[in-house]
Every structure is written in C-alpha cells, then in structure tokens.
Image (cartoon, rainbow, N blue to C red; front, side, top):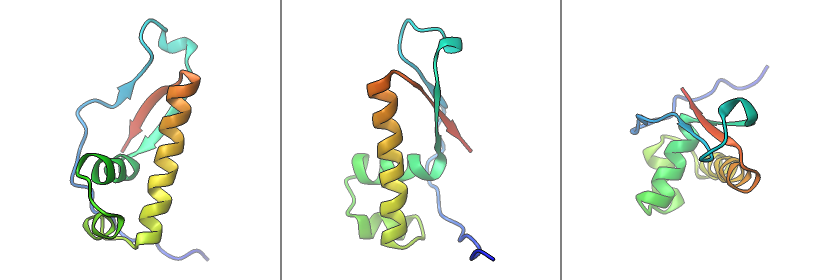
Amino acid sequence: MPRPRLCRRISFNPNVTYFKPQGVPMRHLEIVELTTEEVEALRLKNIEDLEQEDAAGKMNTSRSTFQRILSSANKKVAAALIQGKAIKIIK
C-alpha cells in the first residue's frame, strides 16, 4: 500500500489555465497537462527566485520531492514549447 500523500501548500491560483501556439486551432494540438503543484514549483523557483530548500518549505514538502515536481514541470513546459503543444493547468 503506498504512503499517503501529504497536503502541499499552493499559494498561487492561476487565472489562465490554457496556453497554446498562436494560429493553430486547439483541435490540431496535443495537450500537456501541468498540475497546480508543478505551476507553483515553477513560480517559486523561477519567478520568486527562491532556493529549493526555501521553496520546498513554502510548499510543505521535502527538497527532494520539490526537485521531482520542478523537474517534471520543466520537462512538460519544454516539450510543449519545442513540439508546439498546448499547456493545460489542471486543479
């Protein structure tokens, strides 16, 4: 039985939940889904410029878990930008 998941703190609730390449209809696009946890990790590290230890503390998680969340978010965003996919933020 897996360990129960801790409740992570998310301080940012995005108003916009879809991003897509300009000029391409949504029906022609693959969608990459980012969780609110991943968006929060991106925000804390890249916008707030926090060190991983501090950002992990703000999210109420360990530094290694924060790194895993951040790495997953970076891969998804990079794939969307390079391969021309839409990004959907799921709650």
